[in-house]
Image (tube, rainbow, N blue to C red; front, top):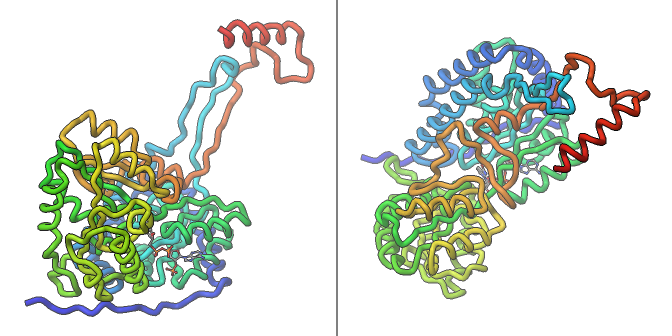
Amino acid sequence: MTVQHSPERTTAPTPSDGEVHAAVARARDAALWWGALDFTDRKGWLLEFRSRIARTSASLIDTVREETGKPKDDALLEVMLAVEHLTWAAKNARRVLRERSVHPGLVSINHAASVRYQPMGVVGVIGPWNYPVYTPMGSLAYAMAAGNAVVFKPSELTPRTGTWLADAWASLAAPHQVLQTVTGDGRVGEALCRSGVDKLAFTGSTATAKKVMAVCAETLTPIVVEGGGKDALLVDATADLEAAATFAAFGAMGNAGQTCAGVERIYVVEEVADRFVDILTSRVRDLRVGDADDAQYGRMTLPKQVDIVRDQVEDALARGGRAVVGGLESVRAPYVDPIVLLDVPEDSSAVAEETFGPTVVVNRVRDLDEGIERANASKYGLGASVFTASKAAAERAADRLRVGVVTVNSVLGFAAVGALPFGGVGDSGFGRIHGADGLREFSRVKSVTKQRFAAPLGLVTMTRKRRDVAVARLLLTKVYGR
Ligand code: NAP
């Protein structure tokens, strides 16, 4: 028997600007304690945080399900991936961020030179609703592991999930609130941008990213932007079509298509296109959609997203595209049944704009190179997948695709790999979360030189000798001018 489940909209307190500033002030105190701990101590706390989340994950999973409407298994997967990243960040911060000596070079041979990565202080994290645990954890875990305190503003659609995470930290009884959550809508996000945080990590739409960036520009607050996407999946003539269609179905329809790096466009080489479309059709046609416990995906979390999907499908069909699975009738708010569109003009909104729904466009291309070209024609550049049996073709695609992450013969391959940086180019944003680059993203880089002995050439003095300048000139022309 399946149990019907009614998603709940949560109302959460909206703090005033003053309360947001107070949270940041508390975080600043916490950062003094946290930033002064050594890596081993921080690792200990973070792994305890990790264990706490994992041990009590059942209630987190329920909360995610209630707030987003996604199936329980998807919520579980999300929490598992988040915990994986928390573990990686905790265990690798020391290796990545400890002081590192560098060669000083010929001219500065009398110096010892090194690079230090120091905590920035307080990091503000603004997150979306689609993966309300996994997505912010990409910033929270890495910012905390780098020695920063965090103030987190979750989406107004998922406040209880955000609060759950801060409560889990608080339950460790650490002497300071290294992680706090402030709930509320975009105005609270804006207050966080203005609060004097040392860095702002934003994940959300490109349109909001521009507003966030404009506010942060007022105080030169640096930001990292994880924005939207219009990811392409390329199917080469040599591809395993069964696998390509199976992964394409997950990439496009999983989480009701509400995945930043989900599959929104498929470019399939002409000679295998019909066969691929047949298999893809069979994979998505009968997906179970709804709030029942055995649904394969749930409702559209953000009600207005349904209108975007409808508009794009309407535009695609009006401009000569064909629906081989579903159609306008599939849009039955708050759900959207799977829609597969074929031969849609490249300048239609269904191809050019982020959809964020369970629809996918399949267009035919002459060869893989044309697929790469079309994939790259997007203003977005988050991720891409390529299916091919040719190692050379896979390498060529990985090199030439203008995106932050490429997955070969699968989809979303980066998601669970802690060591891999994640982020986009163009309208998909800039900066990186995850991996060593993600740890450095939340660190202040400091270069240190220590003079070990007097310089053989006295050039950094107000009383340079003619002989030293002559040697410098000789160096310049004979060594560098070779
Ligand atoms: P959104 O509408 O841009 O909101 C993102 C966050 O920004 C929310 O917490 C939102 O608060 C807040 N916000 C809104 N206006 C703000 C303002 N003026 N100043 C500061 N903060 C403000 O995005 P969403 O609908 O939540 O999420 C979907 C988008 O996120 C999609 O475009 C998706 O591709 C993208 N995304 C990207 C990644 C990635 O890693 N690249 C991952 C997941 C999602 P309220 O919601 O409370 O208004």
